[in-house]
Amino acid sequence: MARFDFTFPRTPHNIYASKGKEFESVVRAVVNDNLHDTTPILECLDRISIPHGFRLFLYIARAKGMGDESYFFLAPEETSLNDVQEHAPWEKDLLRLLEVEPSEMGAWQAHLLFTSPCILPTFWHGGYIQREYIYSYVTLRDVIPPEVENIQEKLKGLVNENLLPSVSKSGNTFNVSCVSWSQWGGLMRDKVGLPLSQNGQARFPSCRFSSSSTPLV
Image (cartoon, rainbow, N blue to C red):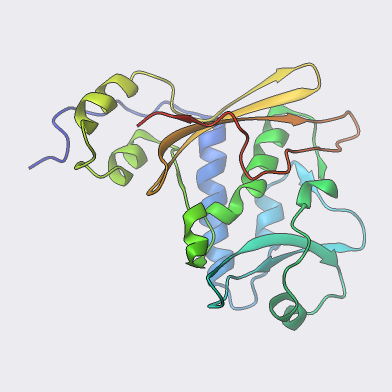
């Protein structure tokens, strides 16, 4: 028996969704690599660069306290892998130091890195931040439990909307829109403004998500 009694539309090509899927695949590989070599992350996010003398590291959530989160961070090149795990928390404000190409794709890649804790391993209550980003209608079909109240009617109304990521520019601000599903928040559309100067410096809201999150289901 089908989970839903209607057919989901074919997912149109979307460059931001394609990059998002590629990024999630690379993140999984880096997490599973014992050395957590982040070189593939920067190869994937080719519109972002890091300042001389720094490296991108990955801290993996540990079983401690009431919960923990994983995250990428910048530290001096000489930082050891042992220091990475033993001396957390590290400075999480990546975009304070990153150089981001002032373009729609640059803004999208910055958003991917900024929200990466939501797709990285967590421990216990740290899992409240976990999200499934919607990069195709197949993902939408697979992640939403069919027992959600009135989900059939709600999704029928949504599948004709553009639920895939988009980026638009207004002045020096790039407006990122994307949809995600979480067990605790449901289906949400997040809209975030990313100011980018011509020299590539980025300033992002200090909170993980902007205040313009809109519930869809």
